[in-house]
Length: 273
Image (cartoon, rainbow, N blue to C red; front, side, top):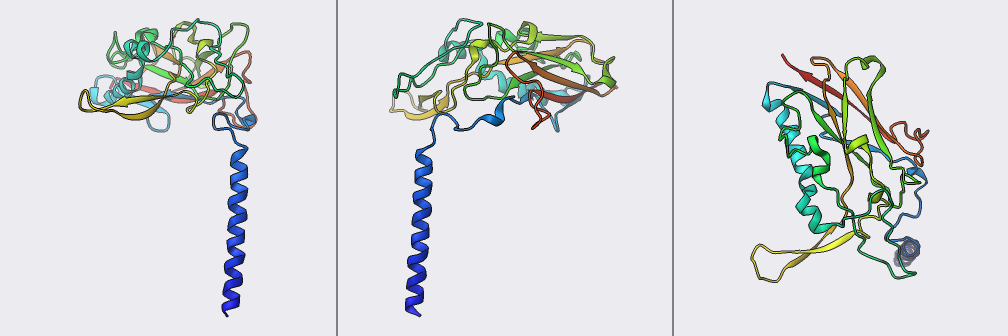
């Protein structure tokens, strides 16, 4: 009996050792800063803010409590984009060209820097001129962001990718005029490529008591570019199904793996009674 127990103890210890060695060797082949495989990310996804429940933005114009939560979401989301915060943390870059930060052989040029994306660029949708982002007037703003993909360069020859929104076929007469901020709904090339959380992480210090030794923490030194879409005269008291998609000379518009890649759909409804 003791020999059997000893055999299984040695056997399973050997298997555990082989497993640990295999995992160790595999981890040695991985890059801490960039995924080994990115073939499934040819077309990045898109998302909106505020997104509501199930990508629905539904509210009643004359009832503040029905749209105030959307305003709070936008306030919190845009707080890091305040011009003073951007000037303190990020660089004023040259527009319409990629912000390339190459490594020198085995020496990594870290942390990578990020270009300023100032909240004021969003103009009527910045929340600075209109603190309700148009929701009170029935002209709501929706923010659109392109999901981060390490190393992606979404454009060439100085042509920035841009967002275009429209209604689904059945709602074409209900969507009305749309305004984009920045103008033309562009994601400027200077915000790319993205180098990843670890490469663009910076060390920050903080303390509740001034002049004391500070604790250190890491935060991502990257401001994701945004496009704001403002619906100027959308039809009230009806569901309007909106689709926004990215247009670029380097991004595939349609993906067989994911029909939602490079686009986002949501429902917008504004009631007046």
